[in-house]
Every structure is written in C-alpha cells, then in structure tokens.
Image 1 (cartoon, protein in one colour):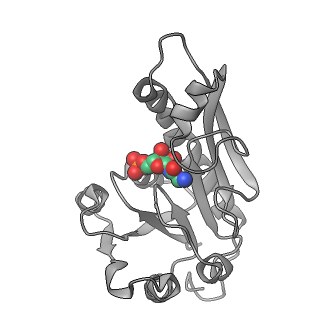
Image 2: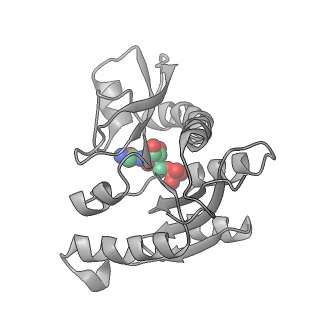
Image 3: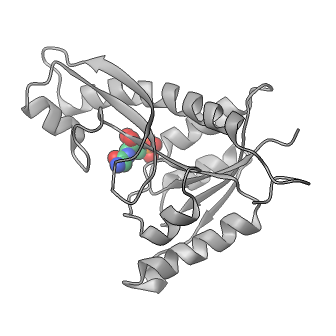
Length: 201
Ligand code: GAR
C-alpha cells in the first residue's frame, strides 16, 4: 500500500518539521514526508530538511506582492505536481486565503502553541503567563478559514510552573508539540483514501 505523501509548510526554524520527518522514518509510520516548502529562502528549516534527505523548496511570497492567492496557487501547483495528499503547517506564519484552505479541506493540519480555543494568534506563551494560567499546552487541528480554529485532532497540556518565563514555558510546550504532531498526522494518514493507482490526488 502506498503511503500518503505529506508536505510540510514552514517559515522558520522547523523543529516540528524535523520531528515529523524523524517520526515518519519508523517503518510502520502511516505517511511519508515527501516535501518541505518555505515562504522564505532564509528559513533554517530548509537546510535541516535537505540534511535529512527531504526535498525542500522556497516559494517566496515577494514576487506576488499583495496577491496572497497567487502565491498560494504557486504552492498548490507544486503540491499537486509532487503527488501530495496531506499538508502540515508547522510554524507557517502566513494567514491563508479561502483558496488554499478550500483546496486542502480535511487534508491540511496545523499545530498551534496553546490549548485552543484559548490564545489563537501570536505570543501565546506570554499571554498565558500574564493571565496566570495554571496550565498551557498545544493543539493539532484541521485548518479552516478561521485562523487557529477548526476541528481539534490532538492536544497536550503542560503545567505552568512557578518562576516560568516565556522561554521555559515555550520549551515545555514544544516538547509536547513534537510528540502530538507526528501522532495526529499518523492517525489522519491512516484514514486518508488515496486514489486508484497511486498517491497523486
Ligand atoms: C511552533 O511553536 C508552532 O506551534 C508555532 O510556531 C512554532 C514554530 O516552531 N505555530 C504557530 O504559532 C501557528 N499559529 P518550529 O518552526 O520550530 O516548528
């Protein structure tokens, strides 16, 4: 049985991407990480992916100016050409238009560093600390048109400890991100029905 081919979209360091690539090396894993795309050539994650033997491309948003959908069409063309079946957003810091979300509905995941629906958006750790939350965490969810929203596939909770600063809390959450994202992807990949004759959608 061919495994669904997965693309990971990043914008930066790519530690979740790395966790996905390494998890998918296990023989029984239900998906193949086949492609990494960044919206900027400067993303350190691109080199990490190449070092792990995964094709990694930068598709810069700059030539498209304010036309976000045109940038997404360029990304989508590559996803289709490479036979991608599932897209994982992993620190991909661009707000998507309804075009790309609609194209990948039910097959696009995101990881977010909070216990959604709490703290969508940026600075999640700082806001959780400022609010005096006893617990914080991370969420893997299906992507819908609303940012950091959509059906939850997995969550992990961590305690907020006395003396925590943003870095300490972020590190505790990130450890859990690296655990739940590969698990949630594996579960979705097992449910995906590939078209007859291969993995091309
Ligand atoms: C991760 O903490 C991820 O949850 C967050 O960006 C970081 C990327 O780190 N994503 C969001 O905030 C999306 N709303 P990474 O590049 O090392 O995976």
